[in-house]
Image (cartoon, rainbow, N blue to C red; front, side):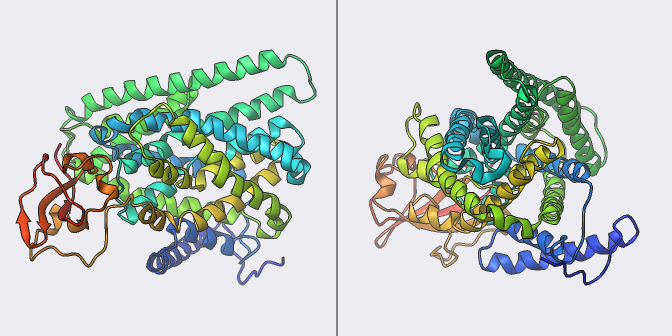
Length: 497
């Protein structure tokens, strides 16, 4: 494919400012249009980057290490914001489930996908398929649910899910990026150790297990310690400006990331744990302003990261891996991911089969897998170009297929709180800052777990303010017996508990 090369830009000159401003402006316009049609914003940013890249306008990036560093920095900011906005009271009931999915579930997904690639496709995926370890590496790169994509889609669509699925999906996506990153680095190191050597397999496996345990333990310990220290400092330092608190939080989180990596731990996990501890500090000064600050720079980080990764893509090279990428993507979506979800949630009761199905569907790929694939290119792993192209293709398909169907799938499985804008609120009006009024008609599926209002297990931040039964208006309480067809008026907003 011949690049369009409409104009020539030297990205080392002042023209870089012109280029960045133009791409950002176009990205916002595309996001506005895409929202009307339910197209994920992250997908549009990625496509815009591809159009501006070497096979499009002709912008070329020859420094993958710089791109990987900037992408990694953007990911830390996205994880930081996700951790700050994670409510422990809301997350506590599902924390074991989320951790099980992000650890055991990821491991099962990698094993299933790696075996499928090796035995079903083999050399069709290039150098990556020439060894079993190479196939597991490709599977590990693709194993995580991308936190940026999940946070963006769930929150921008204001998708409120039953059975505490929203907090569980956000916890999983925030905590399995570190897990996938650890496994990717570990497998790259093992491949380097085994290159040209067929012996000491047992020692290499033990080394891998030790590194994995050490990375997780050190990352969690440093994140928890620095988070507690930050909580003490932030409530006592008495700064006069809210932006200074935001910058202080950012510096502490980045320090958690860097210090954990320096001593052999997982930096992303440390940062995420630290952010959760800080975000759940009840008396954190200027908390609302701090969250607004990070919400803004998170959108900027997402925009720049997906644009940058799109610029790195070479669509003209992807046709050679299109068929294996499609097969791997379908296997991952329909077999490996569901197997990982079902088996990792097997010990837990109280989660319906419908909820597990939706959880398996929300296995969105995004910037995380592409960045991990870029890491293999930087390290010069055999078949790394094929890995990057396959992962990029699967990410596009995932954002297109899964990203556009999460809300319809949730409604189909009756797991979303009715968000129809044409609601019957019986003339009630509330200030906009208090939240949104919605109504919901009780169905037979709602009453499967019990017939009282308490048995509905409504998500955090949702309260029932009135119940209409035929022509009667009832004041709700936890032990109220509900009937199929009852119309609930609910308020969706933040609470102080």
